Length: 430
Ligand code: SF4
Image 1 (cartoon, rainbow, N blue to C red):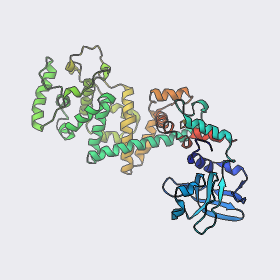
Image 2: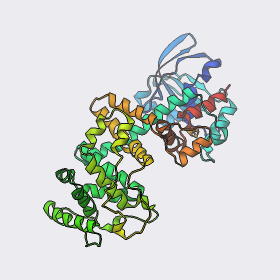
Image 3: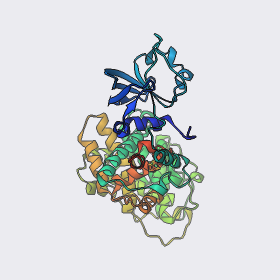
Image 4: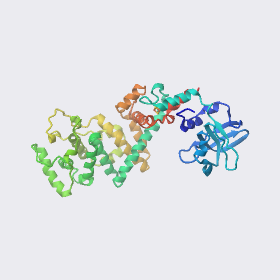
């Protein structure tokens, strides 16, 4: 018995056309013909529903159960489970025991041991051992462009659905208020990985209802953002910052605002252009320049319109480096295009996709998928790895799909659900 034999491989063999090419017989020697392999069942009960097989001259319709050894039927207690009464064929890798229906008749059984090519088993074994960056690294072949594109479309939707699940839980935490949820998510993004948590706290301590009362005054928005972030607690030598402090002292009392301890903001190992004070200034400008941002986003018809919503400049009276007495020559005051595209790919488009689905606005998920095709691919280690394997992402649609492939399929050895893994195993069978 191959050590790494898995029922999952037998499912794959059962569904592939491999068995159709060979004359088949049941254990009792009757000719067997597979008419329909049935529908894979991922819940409790038999492995495949609604299959059709011909045994001898009789056509049978029902379910298929697959095991590594026929004795697994008893190990899994199927003999006392009525869900298995309608099994028409027991498919096993190794036949080690006769299995019977409740009426005492033997359940027709086919053994796959001599029907799977040794090369398929070797390649499956190789995939399962996974001693490289990805399991198939040494036997990888690029699928045809149509197959790869179809698979990528599935991967992108899967990735979007995972992101949507996280957005839905954030929506629940924000009392199903879309604008608030979007405001909190955007704040988190502005914090990038390092300061996502303090940015989230900031958004939670600075309600949109307060912001909306001051949306026409840039200095008041800046004062609220920097004040709640904890940077306006003491007097400062910079005139503009002192003006902000006076504004904030008043607004803090008026709205009973809680401030963060500025120690929560992390500057270490961050480039000056990404210092949290720079990101806070950009966030304040975004709030000021884009009232009703969420509604505007939903109404955008093109990617360039969407990107333009985020092209914001920091107020030139505000020097974000002054808050920490940092002398810097960095003059970058606006969010770069690459950062905007990352924000769109990871936050804005998934929210648009989910909003469209929840509100039955079919054009939104469709538009979201089109926008992914028009945005640049990410430039990270995963995308570079795939490039070295001959799969070069042309846009964000493909890069998101490849990230999903590596993180969810390769990392969990789901090679039998992957177009590349299937191709490797099927080719070894010819
Ligand atoms: S999931 Fe696909 S790409 Fe990843 S290791 Fe397996 S066969 Fe290769």
